[in-house]
Every structure is written in C-alpha cells, then in structure tokens.
Amino acid sequence: ELKVEQNPLFLSMQEGKNYTIYCNYSTTSDRLYWYRQDPGKSLESLFVLLSNGAVKQEGRLMASLDTKARLSTLHITAAVHDLSATYFCAVGWLGGADGLTFGKGTHLIIQP
Amino acid sequence: GAGVSQSPSNKVTEKGKDVELRCDPISGHTALYWYRQSLGQGLEFLIYFQGNSAPDKSGLPSDRFSAERTGGSVSTLTIQRTQQEDSAVYLCASSLGLSATNKETQYFGPGTRLLVL
Image: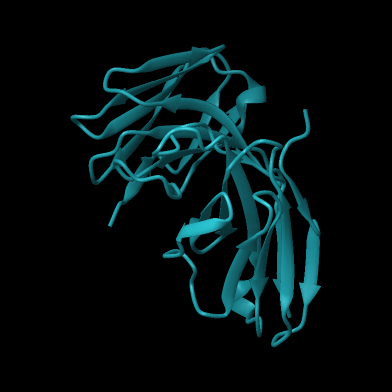
C-alpha cells in the first residue's frame, strides 16, 4: 500500500518568513505532484516532479524531489497572505497509470 | 480553454436513493479520474478511465458505486442506495493520457458536494 505523509498538517506563520512543508511516501514512485486548495474550491496544480533531483520554482514557492529518500519538499520564501491555503502532495505508483495517493494536506495560514 | 466541469455542483438526497454525478473532461484528454474528498478520509482515488475503459476500479468503496464513460469524453459516477457515509465532495480530474503511465498533470473540476440525509 502506498502511503503519503505530510508534515506539518497545520502551519501558522507570519508574512515575510520562510518555511518548508515535507512530503514522505512509502514506496518507489516516478511522479509527485503538489496541489493548492482554497476553502470551498477545487485543486489547483502547482508542480509536477518526475525525476530525482527535480526542482521547480514558481514565484515564492519551490518544490524539490529526492526519490532515494522518498521525500519532496515545498519551500515558501518570504510568505505573503495570498499563499494561505491547503497544500497537498500526491504520489503515483511506479509504472502505474492510475490514480494518485494524496497526503492529508497542510493547512497554511499566513498572518499579516 | 474550458476546464473540467462537473454537475450538479451540489446534491442533497435521502438515504437509500440513487444519485448520478457527471464529469465533462477537458477536450482531448483521454485519461479521466474520480476522487472523493471527505473530512474523515481526506482525498481518495475511486476509479480511472483511459478512453472508455476502466483498467483500475480498485478504489471504488463498494459495489454500490459504479462509473462509466462513453465516447471517450463524459463520465458518470453512480451511487446506488446512498448511505450517510457517502456524503463527500466528489472530484473529477482529467489528463492528456499520452504517456503509458500518465505522468501529465491531472486537472481537477470544481466538484460535486453530495449530502445524504
């Protein structure tokens, strides 16, 4: 069974600070995704990471993947209030084409 | 272009009734997925279609749940004899489906909020 663990599950931080969300998964995978969800809304794709050492950046968010450690990180730089949301990582089975297994999500609140 | 659309956006039903949820994927996307999101269980994968076929039905929680996809486009998720534990947001996603392992981004629809009384 593929398990995905995120931590922290809840994070309250101040604007301007940096922080990292961690995503660990239990079995070998070749695809990892980060999504954002605003309250009452659907999931918005942020990053797709497909290879060891992959790093992607968009604005104040940067995601990386270490397949050997089965770990992905989502780093927030100089947080702003608009980044308040719930962030999910999701992992697919190695060589599989089916659905993703999601972590429980990190509820992020950024206070002015 | 248009994203994934789902209908209805909200559905309230009585326990024991059947419901149908519809998903319209992004045009040209051959892979289609159903997930559900609930407070207790988080986001769970239900079923995946490649074209009209469903190679993976492992996520369907019981035989009351079924899904079909016709013409390689619209999909319907049917829940028979609904139970209160079926209350959740049902999300549909689609992806290009070009690679053998569907590594492309899955784009999600707005969801159908189902409440079973």
